View 1 (cartoon, rainbow, N blue to C red):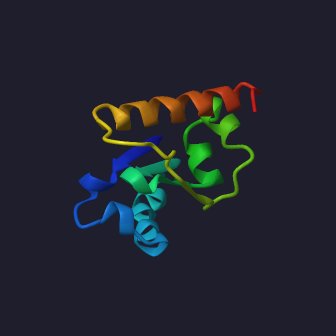
View 2 (cartoon, rainbow, N blue to C red):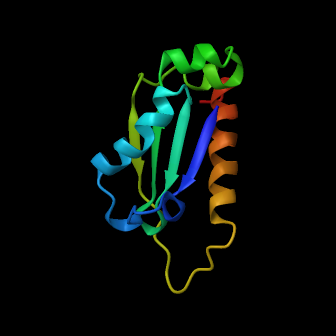
Length: 114
């Protein structure tokens, strides 16, 4: 399983000022419950992605997710910067585009593409 959370939807989380500790505390219960991957989008601050580890991929029954996650260390977290943009940006659909790109990357990696 993979879970995407918008930083705005996370309640008291200030997207651009979120600390690694706050993000770790937010994803910990999900990872402990067996979610294999948690991605939090943080607006201009980019994204935070946490991998649940080997136990999570075993519960998923292998497949593309397990293959894609093969190179990740259990509990690994990555903070990804947002791409710089100029001027006003309409963010409608940004979360959908992020999830589509994340899933495509996982599938591509799971098939030996990376």
